Image (cartoon, rainbow, N blue to C red; front, side):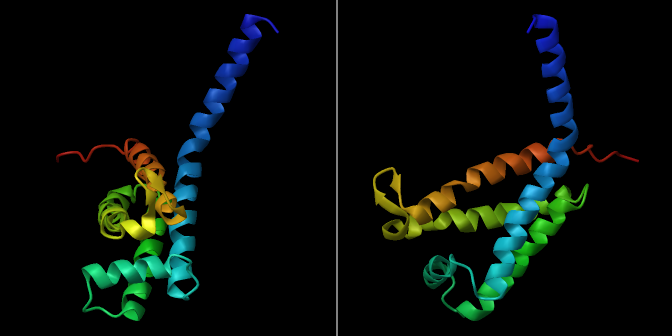
Length: 150
């Protein structure tokens, strides 16, 4: 394969990826948030014990049953907002407190999230992977046009 052919193929692949990354990124975040949220709403989330333990430490005056449904709906709303073009302006502010809340177990529940120093448990890994969600959300937001002054 000569260099000209490689350059054409490379350009075609990159061009194609540039056309699909926004819809694919939106679909990916929607899928994660909506799926995990609906699992919480119907009581099937494997994260429920972790959420319950965190709730006891942070908001003990709210019952788990009330909180988990609201938290699940909140996640579903975030997912839907990312799916709708231009709704990142809503999704990003909703995502910030969600990410803060989901990172808290790393600090408040170390026995659940860490095996030893810098060695996360499966739950800890589940939380740490949110770095990828944050990066994807920010990359989608960079494609927004700034609000114009009248």
